[in-house]
Image 1: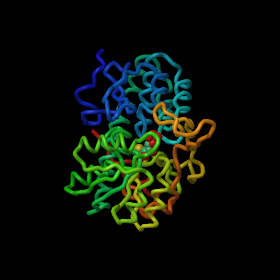
Image 2 (image 1 turned 45 degrees about the horizontal axis):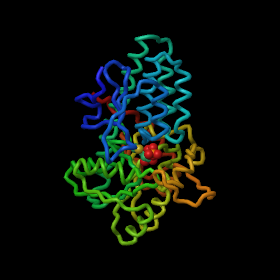
Image 3 (image 1 turned 90 degrees about the vertical axis):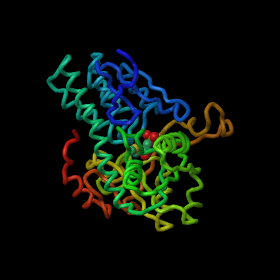
Image 4 (image 1 turned 180 degrees about the horizontal axis):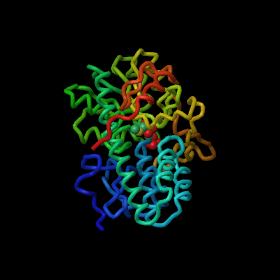
Length: 355
Ligand code: MRU
């Protein structure tokens, strides 16, 4: 079994967040910690290795985490790890994105009564289908989003909700891609997104690769660009959307939403319906990941904060529904955003299965 990326990735792009290789015993994962300087794939052979990759941000972005967790369950089945142990291990990695827990629970149900090679094959087929369906969902929601954006010229985005955060194509960046494919001239301002720099490293990398104009700005300069009228719309992704329309996303998203409201700029969220957690009544109930203070106090190995001074790092924040202009999903646009409109889009059911 070779450790090279298959010629045809499931996303259809030349790169991929992760590919489960033919024998269902190796996942090749793009190491996002090394981007943009190095495009390197690492082989993962156990569920423990997958959990470590998720926790350490080798892979990140809510839908990508779900897909990685699904592949982790396949590796567990392949290596004979009990699936309840694998599920608990994966669920403990990153709590804010709804995808990890929901995928792992669904796979637990699928596994019931199966064992051996049949179990591995069934889970692997499901995981690959999840991956492909996510790409199809992003393409659909991207079209809806691009139509709603109309002739908008400059979009601000925060973090990375692109091909690198999903099965491929991207949610927020899927909207940008769809707008460009439709002939629009939209360009992107990318918040750098301290401290992991998902905007500076990842959003800029994948947009530049596609020839889409992008400029990186520091997180603290967004207000300046809003005040100069240089931002026409905001489009971000989501880790979890509550039943009332509150949106949990990368820390800093709420500040951007407040600025957008202050400057009367539309604030859009792009996310497939599997990001909507109907069991979560409001943003108050979303578990917010607390990450190590070292990620704030240090840049690389260099301490930037005086010795003995503490730091706090909540990985995500919640933007209340009242600040969200619309949510682009693969089932249509939720606008205005509230419990009724959310319920309606979820009830619409999935679009035809991707082939
Ligand atoms: O900590 P990360 O990099 O996993 O956070 C990612 C984000 O916040 C994304 O905006 C979100 O997951 C949406 S991805 C389509």
